[in-house]
Length: 251
Image (cartoon, rainbow, N blue to C red; front, side, top):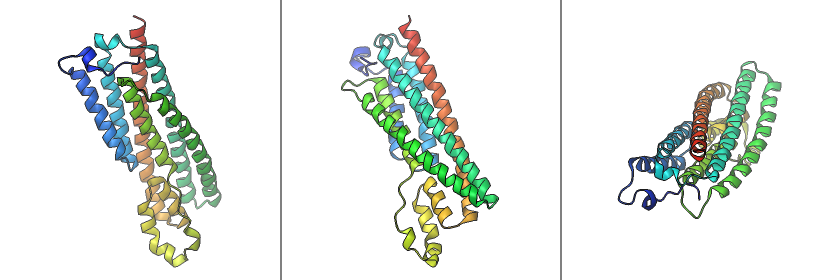
């Protein structure tokens, strides 16, 4: 059984402070993940995930918790490490694509813009493939027996899915072809405001809003850089957790 979240097993009379810290961290990640609607909010939630696994390392110092650590715990952690690594690669690729688009727009390079559109299409396919894999992992993270690592893994995978779904964007409504040039100009701001940051890039490209697009891409690059750094920090924390689990099993 994978690291039971059983207070009656380890702390019969009251919750240990380390367990309380874990519960609080888990609740914060769950509530903030539900409210993710921008790169900045996703970034804050990823930071919360890193703190959640930091609290797990504190729990792993407790003898009663160490007694229920199993090989399954290590396997789950490795699976999450792989998922985090895949998402890191995709966010880095997205950042590179957006940088190349910004350069193409500044140079008024139509070929460069078309290259971005082709790259974006390929990236969406890669994101969809990764999402399918994550959803399979999400099913594996579900357990009839509540456990600390299972709870953390489940919320971590859910967050990574949210990030990938946000990068994928929602499908543009099939209304563009019927718009006249005048209506496009009148509705350009409304269309951009309604969409997430990735879809806004597509909208501004279609509406030929060059100045607004340049500013938006600059802001996005900064936001994506923050997400990338937080993912890297979380990845390092997961490695630390895996080492802690292995050390417990080897002693």
